[in-house]
Image 1 (cartoon, one colour):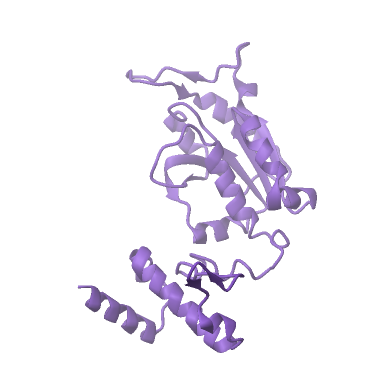
Image 2 (spheres, helix red, strand yellow):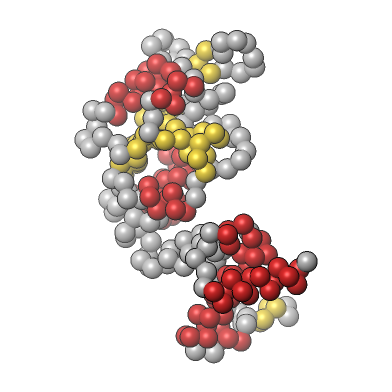
Length: 244
């Protein structure tokens, strides 16, 4: 998996690539990340890539010609990117199904803006826009890191256990079940007995029930599209009736 990130501040992203699993994936050649400075396309001695917005208003807007040169440069890559992603609050929400889709790509390019964002014409130059949430940050560097980490962990070999992501939150359509480890008792807080029973069937059933209950209590909207059995849907209906 290859990521090419265009940003005004490569130094914000580079340190993150030097620690933990993502750093190991880079060292092992499972993931490649190239950071490219957008100021190379400024066309002036000061490296200025923004200008005042037409129509007036606060803030500065990043120029379309700067992004256009970045997109033209990407077309010369071997291989060129499968997707050119503009990181924007107006983009499609980053969900686990979208992460799984992006993980099938060989090469992703990410455009990280600053200030008031890119000139709206940049939207015509990219293949998709992605948002990591309904809030506004100071720039696109953190969203770029979020996309890279979410996608990279699905690349075969990046995680130590190839099956560790298959039962996680959102992968099954539900939030993840609660996890426990030693010590078995801490200040009156106990590990559920079923998890210490060694009975794999009972453990699996308990975990599924807990995931269902946790989703019902914390993110009930996920249940509308989660793949549930008839028995599970009946149980959810019972919980709803009890809550009314």
